[in-house]
Length: 238
Image (cartoon, rainbow, N blue to C red):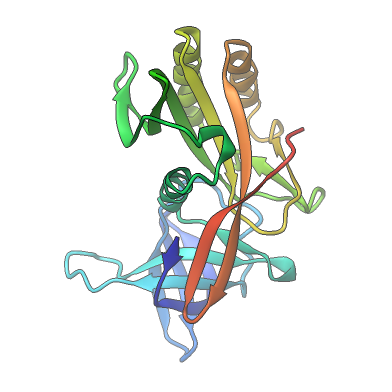
């Protein structure tokens, strides 16, 4: 995946949940939109380098979207929560995720379950339905600097997704939670029970019901005024 025409800047502050003030190279301060509903804990240090995309759409109130943040040791973090689904979908198409290399059908955003939720990716393997939910992982705390953690805030929506996947697993379908560690400085992954213990409990129940769990890291690089993101290695989960 390639994002072109990125604009560098310096992070100033986040407010009203979806607004981020950024200072551009010429000193101009602009307000960018972030679609990340989490806390973005460990990422929002004043002075951190960020990369924005500008939009010409006259209907948009905010003309910039926040995509990337650089943290300590020049590590890059993707905070745009719309990109992980695209990244994983393209990786499955290109047969870069071994667990999903052979499939008969591949779709995005398919309604499923009693509540008619939308699964991020749906595929079929030998006529067996496979439901894949993707979580964007961006948290790494100072006490465990190379360990990615999820979630970074309490998430009832995340617990709901686990329960829905567990129901599909009970039906004999493949139900997969794929945690995408969307930062370049981590070597492993864990669940943040100190942030949302009910999420961890829901996860454990879902695993007992047949939930399959995968953890992959994305490779992120910036060059020629754009960024390249692609699926990287699988990370250990403890």
